[in-house]
Image 1 (cartoon, rainbow, N blue to C red):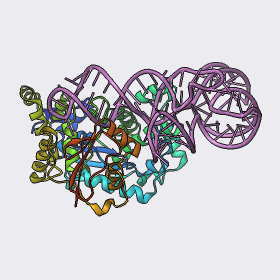
Image 2: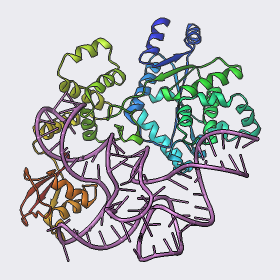
Image 3: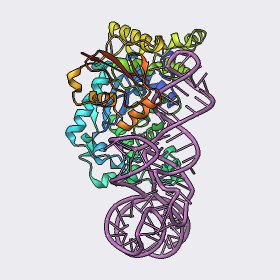
Image 4: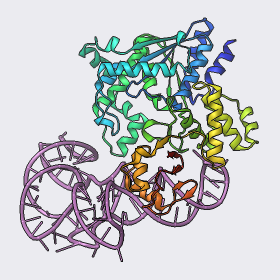
Amino acid sequence: MDIQDQLLRIAQNTEVFLGEDVLKEKLAQGKKLRVKLGVDPTRPDLTYGHWVVFNKLRQLQELGHQVVFLIGDYTTQIGDPSGRSSIRPILTPEQIEENASTYLSQAFKILDASQTETHRNSEWFSKMAFGDLLSLTRNVTVAQMLERDDFTKRYTAKTPIALVEFLYPVLQAYDSVMLKADIELGGTDQLFNMCLGRQFQKTFGQTEQAVLCMPLLVGLDGEKKMSKSFGNYIAFNDSARDMYGKIMSISDEAMWTYFKLLVLESSDQIESRRTQHPMQMKKELAQLLLRPFFDETTIAEEQKHFETVFSKKKLPSDMPIFNWSHFAQCKTLVDMIMATKLYNGSKKELKRLIEQGGVEVNEQRIDNIVFTLTNNTSSVVKVGKKLFFKVEA
RNA sequence: GGUGGGGUAUCCAAGUGGCUAAAGGAUGCAGACUGUAAAUCUGUCAGGGUUUCCCUUUCGAGCGUUCGAAUCGCUCCCCCACCA
């Protein structure tokens, strides 16, 4: 592939692309580029939000470049004080290792493991002398720090910023120096840190890394970025059923960005999809997005389940079964539902749900909270939109 | 270090002695309408019970004043701003 095409490929879907000239030169020399991605091992569960970044890494692998995962084990041990999560417990090295390996095994569902190199930043930071850290911090000014978007926001909103938080960008930037990164990848929220990496590399006499910011994938609510802390995510570890259901529940508008960022379809392809029924397109999206994680049979089953339960409003073919003996202590239906442990709200919430018509027995709505099933008869109970179970004699 | 302002439920935020399990938003959940989309409307949103009512816990933490405290007093913890 010629250099211009490679650059186009690299730039595809990026929100920010800095350092194109330097990159072009390196490509002209036929250099195998080192592509850095920093990984925060506090939360091992990956979401589709990460997929956007992995897609870019995979593209770069396909172009023959070297992906370097940096596990921020050292920075994690200090404990991330950002936002309100300052209470977050500091992880032990064992936990960090475990998280890191979970992270990688999930990542390799999208990426080629054989073309990936991993490092830990404890390799250099654990040996670093305090004086060296001090001279690193000399390279950055406070005004510069405050320019970082989220610091600006927090500062003007008068929410606290801990002093350590200023060190994070510094450490991350130094990682780029140690890894001799040619490209660093991240979400747009990483822009500042990655630019600082460029600055540091220059100070250390290296060529500046190119910076690629991938857009943040919008979450299930259709507004905020997909993130565990907002609860609007689809996780790589979700069950096929959850994944399918969650994809079907995204908004039509968000669906097109999913096609673009996750499936990597061109705008022509997406335009032609727009002319068709959105629901049908969403089903296709779900199929495409489940493929790296599940086999075709499972996907087909989940599609069928979805159609039965939600489109036709019929009962699902499989549901948990409980024997009557399980409910020996139960007086009312409410007690029985609680006894299955499938409902994860309070008893009071469940009663409210019944009062509002959210509970059915044998497809008949229940409207009083003292409702009782006839002993030793088989019934199907539906609680809310998604929870079903069967009671058998 | 000095001065001033603050800490209320998942989040934002009102409330300065009883009518307050605490206004109003937002989010969530359920119902209607649908395509488990969006929009809209309605209800609900601390826990438990023998459920037109009763009990328990909750307004940063603790102690106190009072028949009665989110509200008043004392001590402590934390945050913000300005000045240094």
